[in-house]
Each structure stands twice: as C-alpha cells, then as structure tokens.
Image (cartoon, rainbow, N blue to C red):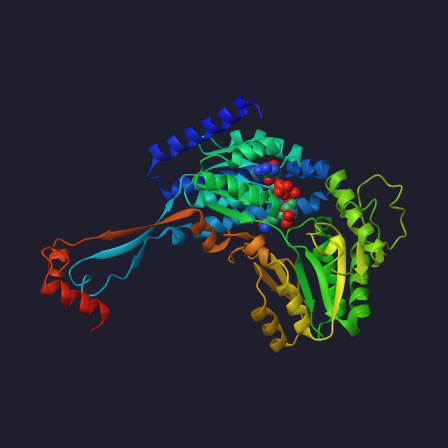
Length: 477
Ligand code: NAD
C-alpha cells in the first residue's frame, strides 16, 4: 500500500485522539447529538444507500436493504438514545467493613476509551458499519470505519456522506482494499471492532496484539439447526427457509446445516421446500431474492455443491418454476438441499455463507449434541420443538454465541440481548448494555476518607501486633 495512505490513516487517528482528549469531559448531549446525526444520515439517504447495495450485489431487494440495513440500524441508534442515561450512570460499589463507616467510597465510572476502529464486511454493508458505530458513539468515543471493498459503491457512498454529518475528528470513513484494511488493523486504536471471517479475524487480532489494542471480533461459523422429534416440520421449514434465503444465505447467522430425526428427514425437507417455494415462486427475475455478491463467491458455492455431489451427496434444488440457472448470468442460486453429507465433504468443513443447506440425521438427540460439540463452537444455534426437557438438554450441553428457539437468526434483532460469538465465532459483543460496556472503560475509582485508614488498619510500618490483628481479621480468624 502506498505510504501516503498509511500516513493519512495515522493522521486521522492522531487528529481524532487529540480532539477527543481536548474535548473531555463531553456531556451526554454531545453523544446523543452524534447518534442523532448518524440516524439522520441513514434516514436522509436511505434510497441511494439501498440502490448502492442493490448495484453492489448485482441484485438485492431495496425493500430488504431498507429493513435490514437502514431501519435495523436506525433502531440500534434509537435504542442507544433510550438507554444512554442508564448506561452511563456511575455505579456505587461496596467497600470492605469498616471503611464505609469511615467515609470511604468506591464507584465504577463508564468512560470512553478514545478512538475506536470499525472494520466491516459486505453482507450487511451499512448495518455492520453503522450498527457498532451507534454504541461506539453512545460510549463517548470517536470512530474510524473501514467498510468492505466488495460493496464498493455502498462504501464509497458512506465515505462521501459522512463528512456532511460529522467532522473528521468525530467519525471518518476510509475506503480501500485488503492492503488498506491490513494497515487499518495495525493502527494503535483504543479499541477495534472487526466483523468478518474467522480467517481474517485471526490476522486482525495478530495486528492489534502488536499494539495491545483490545478487540471485539464478530466472526462466522457453522450455525446448526437441531430439530426435535416434536417439531412442527411445516412451520419450521418455512422459518428456516426464510432465514436461509434472506440475503441468499449470506448472513453470519444463517442456518448452516440441519440435524433432524432420521425418520423425519423427508418431512423436514418437504417443509423446507414448501416454505422456500411459497416465498420465492420464481428466483431469477425475482427482485426479492439476492444474488451472490461476486463471481468468486458464486464459484466457491458451486464448488461446495459439486464436491458434495462427487462424494455421494444427493442434491435437491428447490427451483419451483423450473428456471434455467445454468445459462443465466445473474449469480443467483436456488436453495440447494444436500442429503447424505459427511465430514469429508468441504460443505461440512467450512462456513457455507450461501443458499446451500446440508441435512444430517440422528437417531437420538444426543448424537446431534455430540456432533455439534465435536466441531468449532458456532455463532448461532437453533432448536425447533416443543419438548422443553429436550430443548434444555440441547441448550445446556452445547455452547454457541447465541440461540434462537423455534426460529433462526432472530436473537440478533433483540437490541437488549448482547450479540457476539464464542471460540472461533468471535469474542466480545455489542447490542444491549454489554455493547455499551464493551466500548467503555470501566474505571474503578476509590475515594479515601480523611482518617488515616492505613495507620488504623496496621498497614503502615513499623509492622507489629496491629498488622497481625488486621491480617487475622481479613482471613476471618
Ligand atoms: P472478510 O473477513 O473477508 O472481510 C471483512 C473485512 O476485513 C473487510 O472490510 C476487508 O476489507 C477486511 N480485510 C480483508 N483483509 C484483511 C486483512 N488482511 N487485515 C485486516 N482486514 C482485512 O469477511 P467478508 O467476506 O467481508 O464477510 C463474510 C464473513 O463475515 C463471514 O465469515 C461471516 O460469517 C462473517 N460475518 C460475521 C458477522 C457477525 O456479526 N458475527 C456479521 C457478518 C458477517
């Protein structure tokens, strides 16, 4: 990367940090005003942003973008405005007896960290850049955003619009490819939020470690759906198809594979197929159904299906209108269900991130639990069924970033729930009070009374009998 781009990045960071330091302490009204400006940017330019996303994907429904990227992100901002007073309140903490009686006080102050870097992916290009931004601003920080190069038009538009709403020292959007991203992740931020793949997340964390920059990593993984014997397979199929086909499966939380009771496999596949066909009776010219973002991503997905087929999987394409995908040049792919998969197939080894859905079977639900536990901890886990005991068994014997029962993906839309991964699916979280705290420094503050606490407590040399008495009291003897 050209040295002048790195100099530019370093310069923006320095200017933001200087402005941050000079302006402290900033009242809550300043933070609220920044959140309101971020909301205004999204609302004022909803249409061009949605158009840019459609153009970047080749096809992506502007209605979908309005819902997922504009309204969803405005909602996150409004949630911050509603809760900011409560979140920022200083918390009184206990002091050990008898310090309280002597006038000592302890408290935790939630203070801004400084300048937070935000590296975001292409799949929800506005939401995953401006969503974290809302809580970064709520916590009183400044922000530099590097959105994805795969959604170039959207990223350029965000970079163009931001200076109309924010001074560069408040929020700056910097565009560029992987070289700029790599340089960005090596900057000595006060915190870095990365949303993207596990492989890139590892590189980002390595780069951040050199400066001991704390990171929030929102990564991906293979989120399983475990279907109980008592599940309503028709309803479940529809909900899974909706979650899997939204954004053509290019969602970090998309159901990656299903595990169903052996004797219910046909019912489960019929439920999926009917659900998909009802929502998307046609696909190629259907604006509601998104394209795969790039040729490279499209070929990877085709490769996963071909590899599974070569290794013996049955491939079921849900193509209700019998359209000819082979000669269409639109990077669209029907929901492709794979039966008879095993772990030798690539599709069971990597996150799918597209409309391909392998179905595995189990005889006893513990086999499904054991399968999940034998693999990387997933970002999401889904259980369908009405058997509460079975549901609890699944939840208490597995580990995942989050869970939705009797549906998929939904937990991320609950603003009050922290959203994040565990293990290879990521670390840290945002949304909820946890997100505010993630971007804040919990500063312990202790106020000593006038009285000579150290002298009274035997902590002051010369040590002697009072010291021994104090130690014994502390040990409870
Ligand atoms: P990606 O890892 O390829 O790219 C994400 C960002 O990283 C981009 O801005 C890119 O410019 C940047 N980048 C590329 N190379 C880099 C490097 N060497 N150093 C630093 N940054 C670099 O991810 P993607 O393909 O854009 O997104 C898909 C992945 O993101 C999937 O794995 C998905 O599960 C995950 N994801 C996770 C969440 C979540 O909230 N957990 C949300 C959406 C997507």
